[in-house]
Image (tube, rainbow, N blue to C red; front, side, top):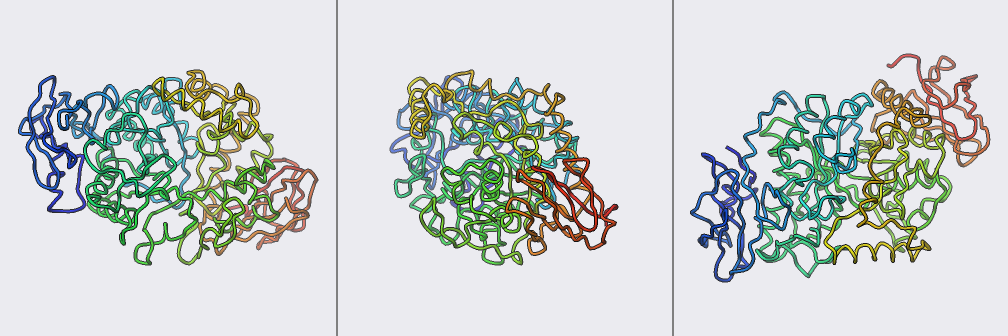
Length: 609
């Protein structure tokens, strides 16, 4: 017996308990459609049948739909469109759904207990460009290499069904269905089961702040959106207006669906600052409580990580202390500081991070803007972080992400901007920080492929997207022919990883460095300790050289173009040894370390404590 929907309320939403439930090889179709004035019809394998109006806007069919059947709904005689909660969309979000029983998969992960965020390393990947095949099955064949690298969590970019074959996934329209070109729902179950067998957790990127512009039929059924709230993608979701209870249930039940029916270990919640919600109980807090309840009943740890632009510690503060109770949040300020220090770029929001001392500061606290003025926003922004309230591991940080690479004009990676020495310095700072580090696929070997913005929209929408991309970067001085066309298949193809290069020249050098860093991070508790109050940074001979103190370990870095000598002051004196260094000639002499230009060394006791 399989249920894809577990309501967080009782009474009025009782119909949702049976929506998607498969018994004896069939389900009873139901849909929330308060916008229907007169009728809702069930379309089932080419035949139509009227549905009965129930309570609170629900319509229910007396016609069972067997597993494998194709079905959809017609509101007031309109076109047949898929179920908003369709678990499978074999031909995409414009065509009828298919009844599927998710409980017919034979899981082998019965002893899997999930993961907690502290101490982990996350690896973000896009299924469609991780391998040439662009499928979950092909991605699963690479899991052993991620285990060998030292990864703990694989974070899959959005899997929701969207029109066309390729895209980033942030234009999803079928929020309950796995994109069919990736392999559909069974492929995700197989991927997660294979990951768990290797000791890898799986997070899924969940987008609840908007739907894509193509294939979104929610407005035909009910007041899912409201003009009272605006987002960068148009009107916002109706999370706090009339008839918003079922909309909130739609989101919360969807989150539980991924965690329960696919055994996913966590969700990355996209841009939660665009979930506009004026209720006393914010939806993020309500979601966190629902996940905690599911975690308790399942006996498996589950994680929520929010992407937030607010710089607000309350996101990851416990509900008992007045916070939202989310487990982690992206801390893009740390990325920005690393990027500016390594590249020297200072356009746009990077300008706030160009002042001397910014990077050392952000290696001890995750927010530059913490009740301080942001020149980019032209206002005070953020809230300070109290290390007594939250551990540093609650902040997910990175050198590169899909956003920070893909939203550049040509999708150029950090490895295309700086040399391998600076790249490896950045990796050392990232992977010895008090935060939860996240790598972007291919970063670990300085992949030569860009990761560009690509789409597969219909002709009309595609032309608008292509022109919009040219106009956006044209305003920053880029010629139209310099900006890859998102609609050109070559743009996606150029973004596919080339796995063969991992053992070539500098790619192999960088890969070995990342692997060594991750091995050291696991072996040395100091280097993954999230206690922000215990981290300090000692200045060096110039503003681009400093020493990060991590317990009995020191991370000495020199990003300048001149050799420097840095005091390391190990508690155990001259017995401290160089554990990992960019240059083999680095020596620990009389409590100092001499670093050539663009170099880093990690020094600590000869043996772990």
